Amino acid sequence: MERIVEADGLLHVQRQQEVQFLIDQNKHEAETLPSMHGDAAVRKVGSIPFVVAEEWSRECDARIGSPEFAEHCKKKLANGDFAAFRIKGS
Image (cartoon, rainbow, N blue to C red):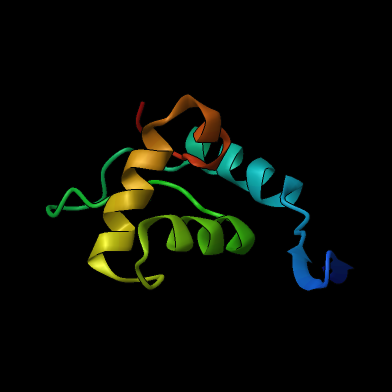
């Protein structure tokens, strides 16, 4: 959901996203997916809601999908505040 609010002569865009389904899906995948996949030992780490990804992109001043953004996401996902977005790992 997107809302545009005018305050103090400025326009502010406020975005919201329902993320409970994503959190429930992450929990399910954490319980059912194997920790490692094949010889490459690649695993899904988590899923991040788009509105959160936009915020993190602004924080690190990098495009979503860039190596810098991926590194920033790893740090954020390691934080306990975002544990619901993690699938595997501590």
